Image 1: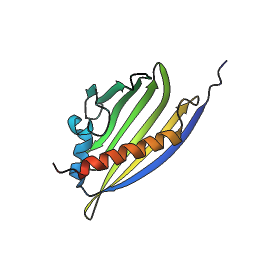
Image 2: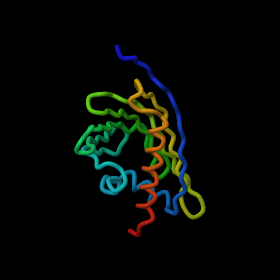
Image 3: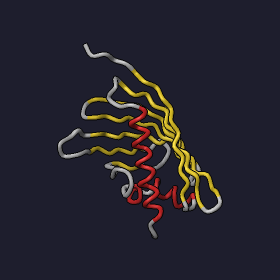
Image 4: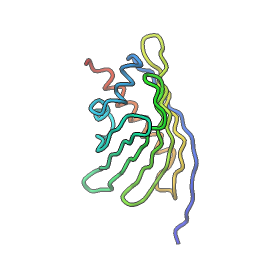
Length: 147
């Protein structure tokens, strides 16, 4: 029998962007803008109680499925969502994420906090934090581009 266990973890990633909170918020709240730095959503309902759903991966697999529900949205200030992440038919984690947008001189400080339950060694907090860093770097590159 396979060992079953849960690893709980919280991590925080901070970024400073030379873009206004309105511009950073737009990059999260507009499906076309978000698809430039995050996976393209199959469902994108950006409102409290709304769902964001995407499924995909490399041709050789596995297929990853991101299924989120927006819990709290304060325009240009805060986005909170809970989500599951599956690899194929296996649930690998459940998380709650808070994205804070804080105006600073010359831009925005983004604070990304994830609290997760990672299942049976299929994913780890360290791997997720690394992926989050890569994702926020991609967001930064999009924000640097002129609109």
